[in-house]
Each structure stands twice: as structure tokens, then as C-alpha cells.
Length: 345
Ligand code: TXA
Ligand code: MG
Image (cartoon, rainbow, N blue to C red):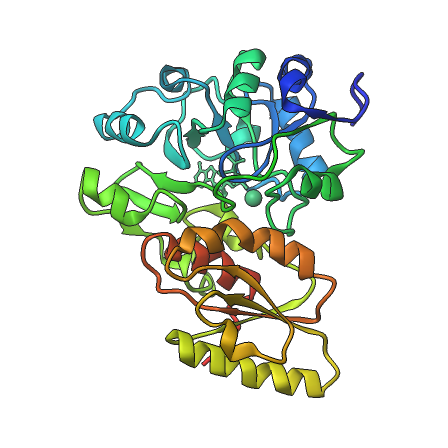
């Protein structure tokens, strides 16, 4: 789809102005957020939103998140704001928490993929907020990757996937969190559909018990309906095979080292995503340190970038499991999907 704007990569200082005018004219703008880069379009313009699906090659039954610049902007998108949503917005917005509730009629079907609910979030990134303000409308934005690739955590990743297919990329440097936002449904009992940096524990400290959708750490069963359409798809899939070493650090590292040696003997190019705590187990093998197990946020920040980097340089990537608490849950959700749930145990 052509618009009148040439493709360009721009620094954030002058990019938000231009970006706002492109969005108003129905074009596509990639922009930084605190989680991953988003691919934005005017969220009230069904035609503009359809271009997002074309550029990404995204299945049209997978709904998008609307991004707002202030809490009150939610009023036009939901017929009412339940008290629990107010509480959560006050606690976590701007920030990596997406809230799902019934939609109002102003929201186009293209955004919700025909569902009667809509996802909304207010990102914690100055460039993103400035762009949304310039656009003057809610901005529909999935992650700015080609469908099936890991989400982009730097402008360079967006360029790799989408250059020539979109109107503008605003470069805001690397993303602070590196995994997409927590998605929480408030239709019925509060349920996490996708874990993120706003953890189950953080939510429960404010609103009490929160449920987890069943498919967060295991594949959907035959015939099971996805709570979130996005979970049906093999997201975050790199070219290389990914294998997850399960168990406590020493066990995981031993399993990885053994499987590495076997794969190498078959002539496969191997890479280990090691941690500060386990590097010593991998001596003599190819590894890269992706973070500190004591601080899961470091692993979350690096996972997608490293999957991209080694997806073609290696045939097999080995990574350690983390305890599924706090941000470890988001990490394991993405890692297990990248691995197609293949584990070493
Ligand atoms: O951090 C993020 O959330 C990033 C940045 C750009 O904001 N965006 C992002 O969007 O990750 P996307 O489209 O890649 O993921 C949105 C997820 C999908 O799994 C989708 O199925 C789910 O949210 N979703 C959106 N609307 C929904 C709805 N009404 N009901 C259930 N799931 C919904
Ligand atoms: Mg995505």
C-alpha cells in the first residue's frame, strides 16, 4: 500500500511531528516503546489498520492494542471504565500493562478482529506518548516485526523486517524491557493472557487474586480455544532450533552441555545463551552471556535481540529455564514459544 510519504528512518526529536502527520493521513509509523517497537496506524481508521496486517503478514483474526497518551482517552474506547481498571491505570500507567474490556462502537472491527472487547495501553516512553499526542487519535500498534519473527527491541530490527513496507521508523534506541506488555483481561475475573514486566505478583498486591490463561506455559490442546488469539500462533520463532534446559542451574547447564556436544558431533552449529551464574559450565563451547539469573529483567531485555542475532548464525540455540515467578514467567512464556516447547529434561 502506497502513501505519499517516502520510507525514512529518523531520530526521535523530529520524528514525532512527521510521524503524527503520517498517522493522520492513514500511513504506518514504527516507534519505540518501553517494551518493544510498535507499528502504528490511526486506531479509528479501519483502512489504515488493515495496512498494518498487510505490512506484517499478520493473520487478520489477531486483534491489536490501542495506545493512548492519557488515561481519560480510554473513555471513548470502552462504554464504561470499571473501578478495577481505574485502580490499575493509577498504579501502572504509563507502563507495560495492557487492559482488555468491552469496546465501544467507535472502535473499528479491524482493530478487534471482530471481538466485542478491545485492548488498551498507555506506554511509558516519551517518544511514543509525543507521537500519539501529535496523531490526536488512539494508535493501533502490534509489535513492529514481520509476523513470526521475534519482536523488535531496536530500530535496526524494524528495518530488517519492514523497510520499504512502511512510511517511517522513529529510532528511539534500544527498548528498556525487551518483552511485550502484560495483557490482562478485565472481562470477568481478572486474567493474564500474556505475562510481562507488570507481574502477577505486582497485580495481586493491588487487586487480589489474578488468574493465568492456561496456554501461558504449555501449548494449546487440540480444539482448545485461545483466550487471546495471539497465543495460537508460533510467535517469536527464530530460524534456528531452540532447546530449553530445564532444572536448577547446575542441572540445566549439564543437560545443555550434553546436548550441545551431541549436536556438535552431528556437525550442527551450536550457541548457548549462558548466564553470569552458569558460564563456567560451558567452557570450551560457544556461548554468549544474556544476563544475570538473579535479575531476570536482564534476560528479558536481551532475549529477542539475541534470538535474532543467532537465528541464522546457529543451527541450534540452547537456553536455560528460569523459575516461573516475577518476570521469570514472561521470560519462560516467550522462550518456550520460541522453542516450540522443546525442552531438555
Ligand atoms: O508491549 C506491547 O504490548 C507491544 C507494544 C508495541 O505496545 N505491542 C504488542 O502487540 O505486543 P501485539 O499485537 O504484538 O500483541 C497483542 C496481543 C496479542 O497476543 C493479541 O492476540 C492480544 O494482545 N489481544 C489484543 N486484543 C485482544 C482482545 N480484545 N482480546 C484478547 N486478546 C487480545
Ligand atoms: Mg507481536
